[in-house]
Amino acid sequence: RIRTSHYNPNSVETRVVNISLSGLLLEFSDAAIFEYLKGNRRIKIVIPIMGEDLELYGEIVRFTERSGFYYLGVLFFKSKPGDMIRLERFIHENMQFQFL
Image (cartoon, rainbow, N blue to C red; front, side):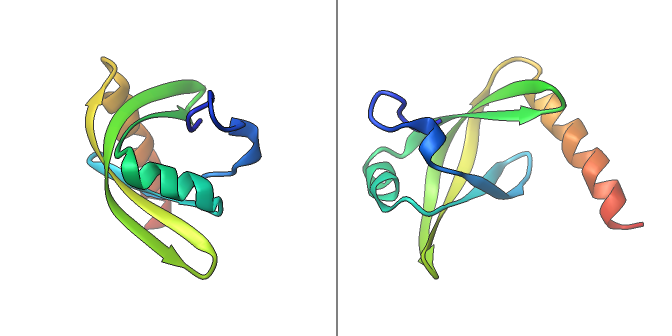
Protein backbone atom coordinates (compact mmCIF):
# COMPACT_ATOMS: atom_id res chain seq x y z
CA ARG A 1 0.00 0.00 0.00
CA ILE A 2 1.60 3.21 -1.09
CA ARG A 3 0.44 6.38 0.61
CA THR A 4 -3.22 5.45 0.97
CA SER A 5 -3.97 9.09 1.70
CA HIS A 6 -2.84 10.11 -1.81
CA TYR A 7 -3.27 7.01 -3.94
CA ASN A 8 -5.80 4.21 -4.20
CA PRO A 9 -3.80 1.15 -3.07
CA ASN A 10 -6.04 -1.15 -5.11
CA SER A 11 -5.26 0.70 -8.34
CA VAL A 12 -1.59 -0.27 -8.52
CA GLU A 13 -0.26 -3.79 -8.72
CA THR A 14 3.16 -4.10 -7.18
CA ARG A 15 5.09 -7.25 -7.91
CA VAL A 16 7.97 -8.49 -5.78
CA VAL A 17 10.60 -9.55 -8.33
CA ASN A 18 13.16 -10.75 -5.80
CA ILE A 19 13.31 -10.88 -2.01
CA SER A 20 16.04 -11.65 0.52
CA LEU A 21 16.63 -10.99 4.19
CA SER A 22 18.36 -7.72 3.34
CA GLY A 23 15.81 -6.29 0.91
CA LEU A 24 13.67 -6.66 -2.16
CA LEU A 25 13.14 -5.54 -5.74
CA LEU A 26 9.68 -4.17 -6.61
CA GLU A 27 8.11 -3.78 -10.08
CA PHE A 28 5.10 -1.61 -10.97
CA SER A 29 3.82 0.54 -13.84
CA ASP A 30 2.58 3.77 -12.21
CA ALA A 31 4.83 6.72 -13.14
CA ALA A 32 3.27 9.07 -10.54
CA ILE A 33 4.10 6.71 -7.69
CA PHE A 34 7.61 6.19 -9.07
CA GLU A 35 8.22 9.95 -9.09
CA TYR A 36 6.71 10.33 -5.62
CA LEU A 37 8.95 7.63 -4.18
CA LYS A 38 12.08 9.23 -5.67
CA GLY A 39 11.58 12.05 -3.16
CA ASN A 40 10.36 9.87 -0.28
CA ARG A 41 12.88 7.10 0.08
CA ARG A 42 11.85 5.59 3.42
CA ILE A 43 8.85 3.31 3.16
CA LYS A 44 6.83 0.87 5.22
CA ILE A 45 6.09 -2.37 3.37
CA VAL A 46 3.38 -4.84 4.33
CA ILE A 47 3.95 -8.24 2.70
CA PRO A 48 1.41 -11.06 3.07
CA ILE A 49 3.43 -14.23 3.71
CA MET A 50 2.23 -17.55 5.11
CA GLY A 51 -1.14 -16.16 6.22
CA GLU A 52 0.37 -13.20 8.06
CA ASP A 53 1.30 -9.64 7.14
CA LEU A 54 5.00 -8.91 7.61
CA GLU A 55 5.69 -5.28 8.45
CA LEU A 56 9.08 -4.18 7.16
CA TYR A 57 10.65 -0.75 6.93
CA GLY A 58 13.08 0.02 4.18
CA GLU A 59 15.00 2.64 2.30
CA ILE A 60 14.83 2.81 -1.47
CA VAL A 61 18.41 2.58 -2.69
CA ARG A 62 17.89 1.97 -6.42
CA PHE A 63 15.52 3.36 -9.08
CA THR A 64 15.31 1.88 -12.58
CA GLU A 65 12.92 2.19 -15.51
CA ARG A 66 12.75 -0.40 -18.29
CA SER A 67 10.19 -1.31 -20.97
CA GLY A 68 7.34 0.66 -19.37
CA PHE A 69 7.95 -0.75 -15.88
CA TYR A 70 9.53 0.89 -12.85
CA TYR A 71 11.80 -0.95 -10.43
CA LEU A 72 12.73 -0.04 -6.87
CA GLY A 73 15.49 -1.68 -4.87
CA VAL A 74 14.66 -1.53 -1.17
CA LEU A 75 17.09 -2.19 1.68
CA PHE A 76 15.40 -3.29 4.92
CA PHE A 77 16.47 -1.53 8.11
CA LYS A 78 13.69 -2.36 10.62
CA SER A 79 10.90 -4.88 11.18
CA LYS A 80 8.35 -5.92 13.76
CA PRO A 81 9.56 -8.54 16.26
CA GLY A 82 9.53 -11.99 14.68
CA ASP A 83 8.91 -10.80 11.12
CA MET A 84 12.46 -11.42 9.93
CA ILE A 85 12.29 -14.98 11.27
CA ARG A 86 9.06 -15.55 9.32
CA LEU A 87 10.65 -14.03 6.21
CA GLU A 88 13.72 -16.25 6.60
CA ARG A 89 11.51 -19.35 6.93
CA PHE A 90 9.51 -18.34 3.84
CA ILE A 91 12.66 -17.79 1.75
CA HIS A 92 14.23 -21.04 2.95
CA GLU A 93 11.10 -23.10 2.19
CA ASN A 94 10.73 -21.59 -1.29
CA MET A 95 14.42 -21.89 -2.20
CA GLN A 96 14.37 -25.65 -1.51
CA PHE A 97 11.89 -26.22 -4.33
CA GLN A 98 13.97 -24.28 -6.86
CA PHE A 99 16.91 -26.68 -6.60
CA LEU A 100 15.04 -30.00 -6.80
